[in-house]
Amino acid sequence: MEQGNYSVGLDIGTTKIVAIIGKENEYGKIEILGIGRSKSLGVHRGVVNNITQTIKSIQQAVEEAEINSGLKIGSVVVGIAGQHIRSLQHSDYITRADSEEVINEDDLDRLCNQVYKLVMLPGEEIIHVLPQEYKVDGQAEIKEPIGMYGGRLEANFHVVVGQVSSIKNVGRCIKSAGLDLGKITLEPLASSDAVLSQEEKEAGVALIDIGGGTTDLAIFKDGIIRHTAVIPFGGGVITEDIKEGCSIIEKQAELLKIKFGSAWPGENKDNEIVSIPGLRGREPKEITLKNLSKIIHARVVEIIEQVYVEIKNYGHDEQKKKLIAGIVLTGGGSQLKHLKQLVEYITGMDTRIGYPNEHLAGDSDDEVASPLYATAVGLLMNAVKNDRKDLVSHKQVEEQEEMVMVDHDQTTSTPTHKGERKSVFDKWSEKLKDFLDNAE
Image 1 (cartoon, rainbow, N blue to C red):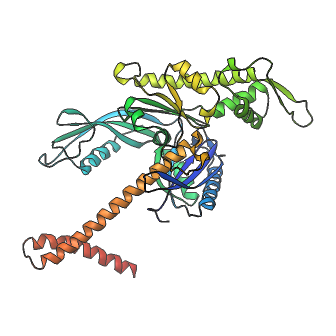
Image 2: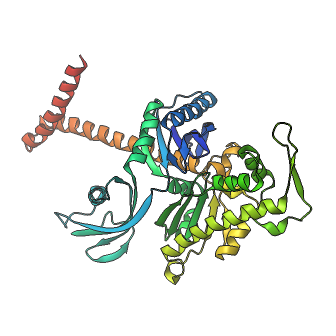
Image 3: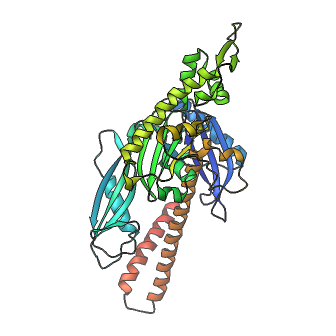
């Protein structure tokens, strides 16, 4: 697989698994080359609970994407969600050896790596360390410290933590499906990349991604991630409620929800009735749409209220932390009729539905621009970004090696610094020699 040529995002959801292949075009937009989806059978509320079934589902989605695109999938970027995800705030600092030199990328890496060494609860692992603001020698609110002078560099971090076993299980499924695991990304972060604009992140926005098994939340303010949470309820619980409340099978409940479901009971008149075929020779069932939307309404209100508690925990009520851009709803659950109005009614915040089409090339399939695929498109964008970074660092290494070779040519005519330069070249030539010896 030519890594620089195309990238792959894999969304392992509770209801569906989506593999999406794409590349960046000359305008910096994502061009979708192929997409594959399969029913997710081994995942419950965002967590893998049946390895064999999940591997099968992944292979199905990957095969479909490969057939559609005519390409071979190698490495994938995967999303992770689930109840076990939690986030915390942490501050850390490093003291630089030479304050006469400007702060560079290595200093930031050293500071981030230090946070990764934090001692977590048993069985937990750090997934993301996201810097918020930096301080240089006590000067606060610095967004980009590279290029500044300073001895002490400190930062506030948003640290996302998850269960080791859940992360390992995802990794195991990927490897067993014959793929390489490129990187694991928190799903609400991937969705936010796909559907939020930079202006919204600056103004302050809460992204609510309503999936099948979980509802993911990501809050941004001043362009920086401020809070993340995963709530263990999604569209699946609504279907379950309809199934119980109307005494019908799950397949019928799901169809009812999609075709006739509404989050606002006042919309339906009492005489609107839908007839559902009975099971094997039994009488058909008649369900009023008013009752259906009452069932849906009760559960949706519960989910939104839990999300709103998280938004308040972040501090939305404080003037400085106010989310001016309001709420963006995405994910399959966001397509429920009148949900936008209900969210506005409960939270009093401006709301819109988020479509992942902003970063896609103009000729992309309309299907991919649905909120259903927000996480998958976000993961693909992540994969493209990673591959671009790898390509750049690979080129830098090559350039450095070329420079070293040029330096060696020059050392023959200029005796000054000869020893120093030669030692670098010697190391490099020894490595090359070892490599060639091993190759034989």
